[in-house]
Amino acid sequence: MQVFVSFEEAQTEKAKWIDARFSLQDTGLGKEKYNEEHVQNAVHWDVAEDLSEQSQGGGRHPLPSKESLTKLFRASGLQLEDTILIYDDGGSPFAARAWWILQYGGFTNARILLEGFEELKQKGVPVDQGTFVSPAQSSVEPNWQDQLYASRSDVEEVVAGNGQAMLVDARAAKRYSGENEPIDKRAGHIPTARNFDWEQLKSNGRYDVQNAVEPLKKIANADEPVIVYCGSGVTASPLFAALTELGYSNVKLYVGSFSDWISQEDAPIETSN
Image 1 (cartoon, rainbow, N blue to C red):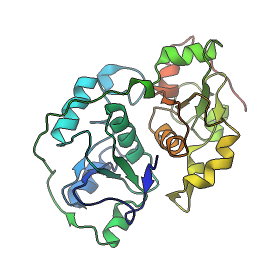
Image 2 (cartoon, rainbow, N blue to C red; image 1 turned 90 degrees about the vertical axis):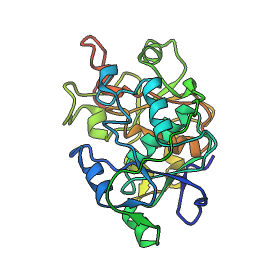
Image 3 (cartoon, rainbow, N blue to C red; image 1 turned 180 degrees about the horizontal axis):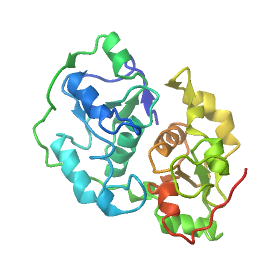
Image 4 (cartoon, rainbow, N blue to C red; image 1 turned 45 degrees about the vertical axis):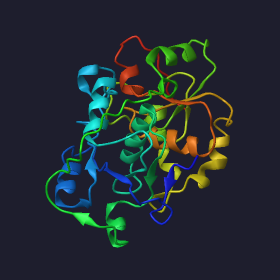
């Protein structure tokens, strides 16, 4: 399944556009950029406000309820079969988070653009300025793909040796090893997890999934069950997307990720590689 596409490859006719620009360091920046300029008719999905729901609990960017996501899909004017093109600043994890949410909802024709907004603009994509786009609301009924979601209990089963899945930590090696933890209150990784830094999916600032084929083979085979996680479920989304494009057929995302795992003080963690 092709997940990442260039603008030249994309089916732009009648496509619905989603602007997923965001910054983990400045959570208002994506919305500010969208208000300045965005692809014509694109809606904006904010990682903090639309693609997370703090009231749900479960890490820094918890998955919104199905009811909240249904409202988002409908407010965005989406139908399950729509061609949907998602962009961010390019080489960021935020379009992938939006793409995973769409997969979870059962949308069958969503793609992540390789180009960021500025490059799309340079290529002549029509842009608008000003207020948020409000398309005609749809009445879509999501076709929930619950098999793409890993719960905490799923991960606990793997750690206990009762589950067959391979845990893959998408954070930087120093966070995985516990050598450096700039965000969470505990350092290290979930026991049994292997490490594959999501940044390895990129070359020259752009996703290059084929470049990661051999390193990923050393982590897990395409027919093995895999559960990916990171700090809060955001940067693991590109890894989920890459594995999907490369034909891994049984991949789940632990949306709560390490920040959810350590929310229970007695949760086991490992340090070092």
